[in-house]
Image (cartoon, rainbow, N blue to C red):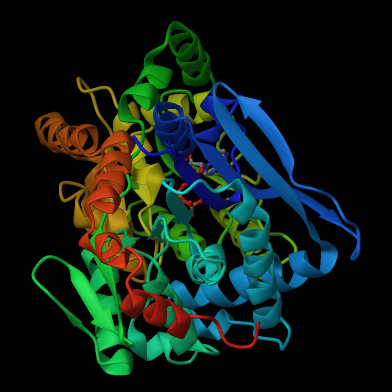
Length: 480
Ligand code: ADP
């Protein structure tokens, strides 16, 4: 079996699988099976001109190679182009794109640095798997340095419609660089269709019956690989003896109230203000829920150096204050808004004890919280998942109550329906949802992607043909 090389912006802490979550576990599992290497940023910044060689560590047969970014790289590549341009744009939020000259240059520079630092570690028959929007042009950079190994790319976040992408600086270059990969994977059919439409319109593209797309005079295989969670491990966390003790404790604190739970990073893509408004609307139009229900919204701090994130934080603090001021009483706090990271074990318990999991992103690549909520439920008395139709997870979690996250009244009605749903209906929905997330878990996702990459016909074509070399030459990024 070929050695696997994983490249992502950050490398997970391999010594703490419980806290790192399913993705890290699945990637680690694949790396262990193939004796692999994981490459990425170490999370530190250093002043420009500081020369620090990559740090090499070995943990349970896996080599991690990490390097710091300069403060300028951090500003331009990470905060600027990745989180200030690509993140909002690919989440359909052109209004939040903050494009400054220098960002794109910084993005190209860091991708080029990553390729320089990674190249000496590569062996001829490695399989390389690049993750996410920070590293779109990394494949092209590696090809430029003579890398002829199979390289796959997986986009964890949405791929927006071509009409939106067309507004991005050098958007054609961005998409064209993807054709340096042998396989490009997306979360959902919607993302795949958006990509196809883009390359049809802008690159004269077409896709054949086996999923090979030709455009810009090049070819890549494309596919849809919806990511899952480590379902059984998460379930085990929610049902351990320690979890049971915590549940008893929690029950004492929340009294006999019904609990609605929301858990997200505090990101504008998660639809948090309208989620809070929907809860307020529920209390307004169905007053029987007052004192009978509590909504706990946990919103972990994230990307606080990016301007748009400060705005959403302020908005939520105001909204939560207003809701508690309007509806609260000395013996009832209607909304518990918690702006903190919470240990995953605690999240599992909170999910299990909540009658409603409220997941309402305006746009989300997949949304793993929705799957974690289902995994944690007690099949004898399960809660109800209320899920945005714009989360990637809605393509498969059909038995959730699907809502429009922009429609506050509709969400309030759905919450009311979820809170009053008969036991038999809850059981039926939960059984189907759990079967889906068990079958399509993160292990299956990782295997499917790597099998597709191993078998893609594109890389087989590559073997030293002049035509392919010429093709790679056309993919070189401009201006780097
Ligand atoms: P995203 O990748 O956009 O953050 P996902 O829902 O796909 O959204 O994944 C988020 C992950 O982070 C989940 O595994 C979830 O349990 C975890 N998470 C979210 N909020 C918190 C929090 N406040 N504390 C700890 N973990 C969190």
